[in-house]
Length: 106
Image (cartoon, rainbow, N blue to C red; front, side):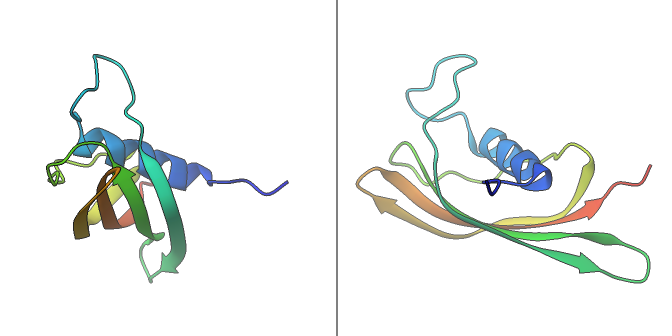
């Protein structure tokens, strides 16, 4: 059985949802109904660093286009995080986010 998300992808998704929230209608400690449409990751390596490039397409609840706050990923250093596209759709707001992480070796 193929895993849906790798461990680094799961950590990135959790951090992204936390950074985008809180969402309209979400109560304390309640995870919002976020729909992940696609999630792709590519490993990258340089002479001194290694990490991943992530592209995540998701739909978040509400009608307002959220901004990306501070993103903190456990065990990773976030080198870049940005919302590339955002469109209001019937089920909420469709976002495409791009993130680049570096493995934290400390």
